[in-house]
Length: 327
Image (cartoon, rainbow, N blue to C red; front, side):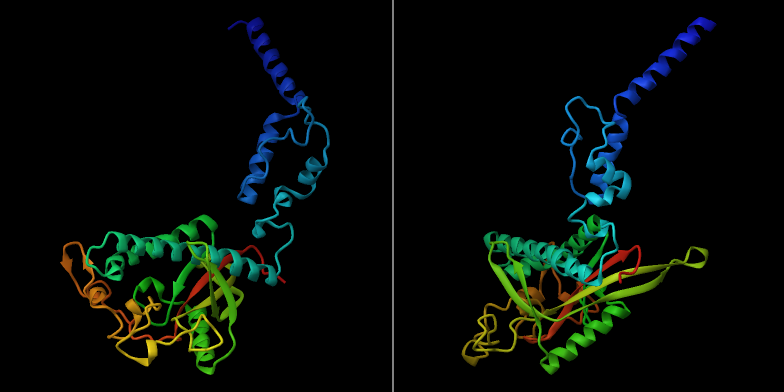
């Protein structure tokens, strides 16, 4: 390659560079769009023409451009609380954990269970829909919890002092809250009203205990050990119905008319977690493949039987990592 050819190529590259720069740095604005949308975790901006004129002159200092330069991508996020320019308060984290993270997880797992139950009713295998659904429960619940944890970055799961699935063993903080929930239930302490949207669009109301707080933990080992702050939230899971209250239509007796031979049909939780007479034989002999096995064959250390209405079955648990502890 002779000197003249090299000079032409050099001049061409310089010209291309300045042409791109004079167009308003389109690459920089593509980066801006990506940064904002990634930070907010939902689509805020699709292009820049909404703030700049049609000529594409991105050198103009629009209010949005100045906002981005002064405060960064997070300043455009109105819904993602983790992306606020200022650290969230404890009250904001509580509302987010209670009304967004836990509610989305609860409604998803509740809806998936109803879908599987309805399918078992329409396409029966044993004639007992709870027995037909039972084999799906171990992986269904775990997959939903894993999906929500992976997509949100927040650890969500169910925990209990009487486990069926060993994945639901509580850690020290969760165990403390569970024991406190059980004590409050025994003492008849007041509960908070919570609402869940059912798959059919109707609202399911329930009264539960709640606990939350900022917890600091040491994560990692040796030189990699760091201090990590978490916002933690738990909501109790009570075996329905609550103790009968004639003024509360959500409550109800364990047996219709007090007759032990007429169990209340609106207590599906007891079909899998109640006393020996309440757990159906079909569930006890739940079918896995072509072989009938006892519940103990799948859960050899099952302690999740023998519950009565009104007892604390466990809790929904949320663990949200924080860059710094809220004030």
